[in-house]
Image (cartoon, helix red, strand yellow):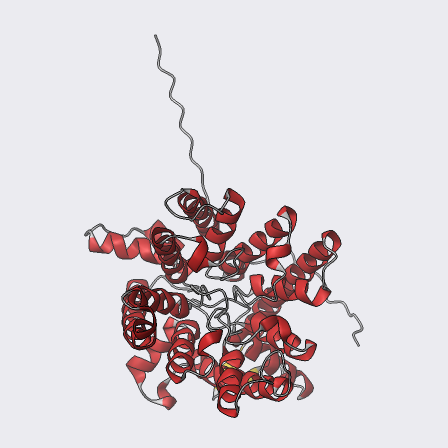
Length: 442
């Protein structure tokens, strides 16, 4: 009898492999969270898949209180998914392979390059080690400091709370073990300093932190690092001051707090939309103006090669620089003694356009199937896209279709930019050139 051999080779691009890896990991996480050992009895598979997606994409939107709906085992599973999703699945895999002494080949390096949003294969392993060291040091220090708050209040269980919230904060996940997030510590200095610093360090970008550690001199820092630091500082100041001014007398948010608590809350709420997702006030009680401010910050997000989402701070910086250059009749952008070419502007325009179309289309679809408050629905979708996790309460009221849309947006908000980056980094030389035409704008 003759043996028939079938040889099939499936060629997938690095972004496709990443998408597949994240999808498989989300479903495996959902199956584990669905087990009776993981929850207290009120979690079905739809809630499990929603929670798993939210954890892996480090978003933080939930359908049930994490602290009461999930057992200690379930909370540990969520923390692991947050850690792996925040650092990146391929980054973690490379670290494991390196620890086992297994050589990381070229295909794995290409996938890793897409995940950490790099255009070069050089120094990838160095970047991976930088990511691991920064993550472990920041989260360890954060857990130790948070223990001074949680242990006196919750006993030895406070140690786990300190570890969980440190992991969640650094990875910009926004998962909390309390139904009101961190609202009961609205005036606690340690919470208001440690938690924001964790998600600022996690969201500013590992490349930026590594560059600062290596150069330690402003003039020697790269253009990317300078734009990230200046942009982050401006957005933090703008968000904190604007939120405080808009909400100072609102009885549902800052109005009933003392002056010190108002200042702490304004600082916290001005920083947390940068994809962190924690809150110390009632987000659903914000004015529409503050809601729009928060949505804008959620869309911008954090930095490239970070645990944060959004279109990224450098994208916003290039858009603004391009606008200034247009009105000054310049064809090349300038910043900190460096130039930014037209190709970079086109990449930024493509990323921003796709992101805005995704957000607006998702809001449109969700608003068709739900008659809830439009601002609340738009807020949830924007939070899902930016992988933020802040909520005005509409997520829990969505039906199966609405939850599916939010899951889809969370997934694209985390994995989408990785796939888009592949196409933006791929050049194609046109074989045919057409004569230039003219269109009228404005």
